[in-house]
Structure formats: C-alpha cells, structure tokens
Image (cartoon, rainbow, N blue to C red; front, top):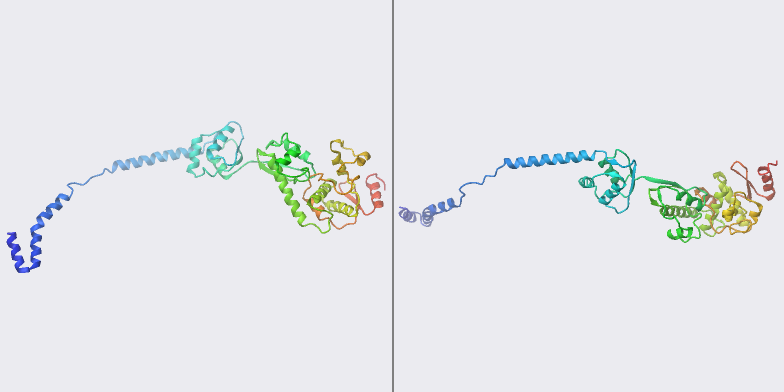
Length: 377
C-alpha cells in the first residue's frame, strides 16, 4: 500500500511527491529509534535528607560561634595583677601568646589564635610593653594588642645635671633595661656610635616616655638626637658677631649659663656678661667651672685655694671657654647663649633671692658684692 501511494505521489507531485513518499516510508523507523534513546525513567534525588544535614550544620556552626563569643568575653585568670609583658618587634601572634602565658596570663593559645584569625587580626598585633589587670577578657586582650595600647615608663632628666647624676638616676629606674651597667663613659659613647670626649652637655634634659624594659642606651641616644636638633636650630638663628667658632663652643657657654642661674629672666643677661668678657679677652671667672674641674674633690664648700687650683676647667686660671660643657643645658640656656641681649655688663653677683645684680664696672660690682654677699650698705 505504501509503495503504491508513493508511486501515485511521484506521478502527481513530481520530486516533492518523491520526498513525501520516502518520509512516510522511513517514519516508523525514525520514531522507533527515538523511542529507544528516551530514558525509561528519571533519576529522583532525595531532598529532605540534604535539608536536614544543612540545618544540622547551621545549628552546629551556631553553637560553636556562640561558645566562641562566650569564651571571648570571660575574664582570664592572672597569676598576679597587673601582669606586665613585652612583645619584641617582629614577634608573630603565636610567639606573642607564648610571652603572655609566660608572664602569667592563663589563656588558651589555640582559642586565642583562632579568635585572631576570625577577626583577621593575626598579623595586626603591635610590639611593645603591655600591662593587663584582673578582669581582662580574651577579646579585650586581643584588642589591646591590635591597637598597640602599650604601657610606658617615664624618666625625667633634669636641666643642669651632669652625666654622672643622670646615669645614677637611670641606673635605678625600674622600667629600663640597664645595658650600660658596668660600662665606662667612653664605652657608652662607643656603643652610641659617637665621637665625643664626654657626654656632658650632649644630652637634652627633658621628660622621656619609653616602652617598659627598653634599653637605657636607646634613651640616651634619643636625648643626644634631641640635643643635636635643638642646638642646630638655635645655631641657625644665632645673633651676629658672637665669639663662638662652632656650635660646640655655644653649647659650652649654654652649660655655664645653666649652672650660673636658675632664673629664666636672668639667663640672657648672664650670657651677655660672658660674651662681653670673651670679646674683651677677660677671664670668665665663673665658679661652676671650677667646681666641675675639682670633680670628686669638691666637698660643697668653694674656697680661695680651689679658685687657684689649675684644671682644664678653671676659668680663673685659664682664658676662654672650658674644653667641654659642664652640665646639660636646657632650651632657655641654649637660646640665651646664642641670642644674648645687648648689654655692656661685665659682672654679676647673686642677690640671695635667686636673681642677680649686673654691673658694668668693677667698682659697681664690688659695691654689689658688699651689699648682697656681705650685708653692707
């Protein structure tokens, strides 16, 4: 039947009829092939067990997160209170935790490390000295380390003191690491990398803050840099015509002014007297230089024989400035030495109230001495 229908289609439709005929002839074969390729059934994935596993995972994760938060808010146990510890530069978090535990803070290292990683704070801790008190929590401890809330020591180095006095104070400071212990002054100068005959005058008096257990050498280095900077600033702004060949001589003068008076209003006048005497080639004749030259021989009472005892620092027996500073001058004395006021005074004497009486001539000076030192009118 199909063949006859094909022949009839060819006769009536031509080529188009032929195509239709072949299509009808092979259609059952094509349909059978596609029916064999179609899967007999679909794969069915169970959904409910997956949902249950997901919910269980979320619950477990929530419990862990909740416990972690609770733990981070619990007070840590301290052996003593407060606990002080230091984290050296370059120390990682695990090393820092070791330092904290060794100092006496009972903290779970792995838990604190995980807390830091979750908060992306593992690489953000700061070096320095820290102090923690009773009630500190892991979260607060980590915050302190990240924000660098270090505890600092404080040392006040007094104007007019000598290096020996400064060193005695620093040697007793409980918050410093005493790397200079047993070293001579020259050895300390070498450790600081300086080329100076003495440290006298080259350390700026100030109150210095530092990380606890810092080296005393570091503090001395800071004081030296500070003095260098201030001396350079004052030297650049100095008055014209001063009798100093270099900043070092100006520093010597400032150290003398520092020892001669503690009254800021008189510093400039005192400096002017010594500048005038240098210009005229007169001896400075200043007692503090004599006392410095006597060193340990000075018993607190300056006698006539002391003024006649020649030392490199005796400005009664030697002309010009001493070879080195005799004290640590402050800013006011540096400024006075490098910017003295215009004055023709050549002498001064203490009035007994902290101020000084200035004179232009020796006769005026003797009268002032009789009045203020000997009680004569």
